[in-house]
Length: 420
Image 1 (tube, rainbow, N blue to C red):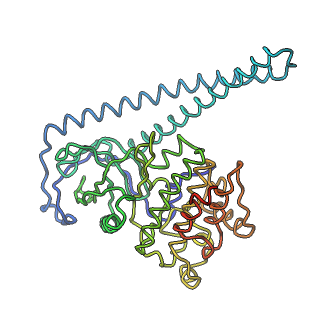
Image 2: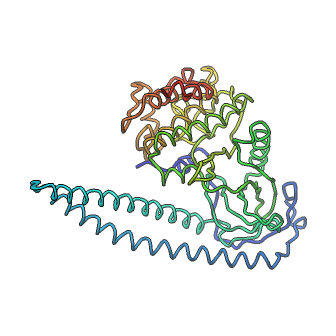
Image 3: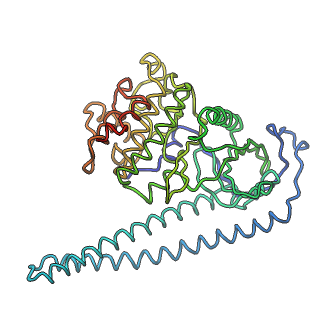
């Protein structure tokens, strides 16, 4: 079983404590709130927010009802699919006696393929709903507070090891925004500064960021980073589109490689590249990608910090296998090549719908598979793959970090000349 990488990430960072307390909204300050309770004033929430809050609670109730209905429907469809598979298998075992018989079998098989595809799509939808409802039910913000007197939370978008991201309605701008909430105020400020700096150099490849706010909810200080709300992240997109057609996979790869090339040219590495940190706009059209979550970003030439400050499923072999950060420094590892490994993992997932190291249920299992891969350098392709795609994967996923290409070199491999 392969675990979601946000679960693996919790092994290397302290998690966020979830409590069932009621939420109290307090005044916004532009610097972290003073620890003295007298410095915090409660806000009066406008009536518009209370109306929205009730509306959003009703939306969540409807979502829970949809999940229950979908569970029952999936049970019925699973039984029907089992029966149809048995019937088609029985028909296939009978000798073909005529062209009409052959056409009937072909029609049955085509219908079965469509039903399987429909069932998988509904099962994916069920898993997404279940995950979202579970996160929101356990969230400290499940009472949908109005933050900072202007941000009415609507529904949860995702949860990391130390933060949550919500969609919120911003009354001053009359628009939806994404809000990242964290109890680690210093880390949030660093992320905001990194994000602003990176956006100033490569804005077309980065999610637009608006503000850093500080507030207190039930006596706990929170940082809130507001940014443009986008349709979904790449993790969600791949759940419903994997495996991607080669052209779409290359389109995704090209955009991420371009973003990395711009960052690396400005001496910045992302350091936490994974589908959950890549946002998607126009998922049913042009599929435009933008990077987000720069709280771990640092100089591209920095030696990697072994065993921590990363998402294990997207970290390269040296992160797993070197004995210490001192050894990493002596070996001259870099976060530039760290990013390129993550790029290769994402491209592999786009093409094949799975991780290049296969399935793993723990960090220990993943480390062992990394060790085996480093010894054998045996990258297994689950399905036939074009030469250009194979070449890119073999280059990006080289066990030796110094042998991996730069993001710019990956773009050269994707050039029209390489594709002919």
